[in-house]
Length: 297
Image 1: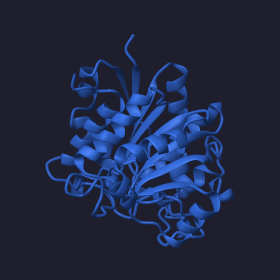
Image 2: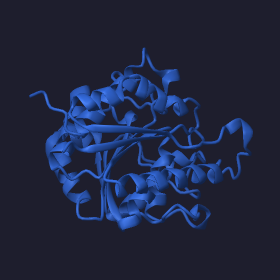
Image 3: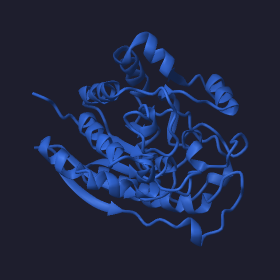
Image 4: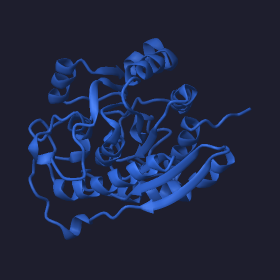
């Protein structure tokens, strides 16, 4: 029986400092996501997008964590959908939107207990409201998922913590704020920078990172497209030069597929406003296919 995949979207950009990633789910779908996965032999259902709020219609809230109330409302809806998908035998494929939606994805997965996450990202996403230089919540989901962001993040429908720090690995990092550096050292988080990848190569690092992530109640992979160099992924929320190449990104996700233990996949921060002819959304489709087992032969 083919693996069953449920596509879930969250057209949210309230956690970002730059508008546009709310159009990411539509761009990825338009680039042929469902058709590509079906060609790979998967049984795919698209469950549409959860309800989200518009920045223009809501107050910003605290400057330390702007739009937090609205973001957590969206995350509670994502959490519910992810939990339903897993209960029905589907692998959730969550499309963002900004990276704050990861709180919802991992909350839904954590119905079975604390799990692990492979975080492919140029940034650490480990700020808290006290350390964030911007107040943008898309820079906080990993810290929040480990229960480090305090009572402000406590909401019905969002399970926190959802991740165990010893089952977290960040790969492709090129930018860490001072507060994030301190947390990484304090919690002994596995962080593999782009320099590590240059020196050691993608395969040994991914195998090591996957081993670190495994062993919790779930194995989640979260892909921020800014992990890829802007030459190949120009349409992202916060591009940083010097990222993974096209082939390195594919190899990373092919190695994920080889484990046959993936419980959920998330692809975020595609910004069509900054993109060129939907190039980044097309790459997102290809990377999703690689993570879910697409093969040349």
